[in-house]
Image 1: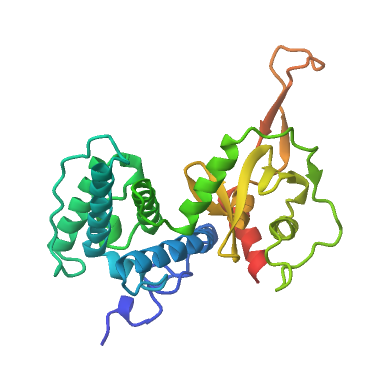
Image 2: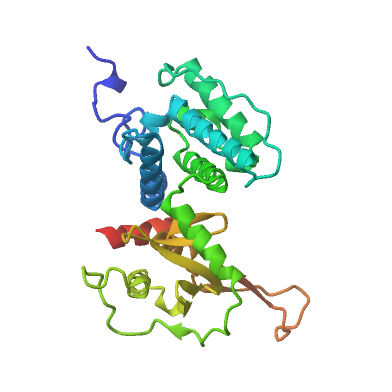
Length: 324
């Protein structure tokens, strides 16, 4: 006879049940639901970046890699070391032809081509790759932890590191991913002395054109459509081609492969929908507290608490409403 905890096949698998098969408390179940929705949101926001990097790696190394097998192909560290080796070769060429005059770091990149996934050699390859990255100027906060790749536990960090690796490669003449190409275009535009921008125009039209084969290249139409879907159109204003004011902050938006709207955020990228969902302000709540010993009509008898961003529960709940 099976033990009680193992007699129910759904125990430990059904998110509504605890490890021993008992129903979760309402609050615990809600937290689990929120966590699942947030994981879906992050996966969707990372997909365009992973797609772009997979195409870049496939083109650079001549291997088959897609968004579906991304971590499985890279988790032994071999292909990442191969990328680093190619970039180092490009760097040495730049020094020889005089296009790069600074001294290159003296780092030897050793790795095992036959390392198997999850093995000690896979970890050693990955650690050596990260050591190379640091030698070539990558900051600690731009590099993933070895276990994130080997155990597939930190995909976002892995993607950000590879994106930074592509930036290093571009510096030495390696053909970059589309995201890096867009970054450089934005940097060039910002270097140009701009004419005083026109007064921002609100996105208050009642009918928003849906992206079709005829207008898919119309970035503004797609920005307007997503802004209305996220109920954020009052907070999104166009300043110029690809430049928008969103929640009071100026951001650059670009089409990635004519499929994904990407927002330039700090040193990285985010999908427009994910950016809007996570930065949309919520109501300002007013709390009243009577201060002992103070008259009822004094001006400081109110305390104001302003919630600038939505809670995780609100984000997950509203996203659930979008997709179903």
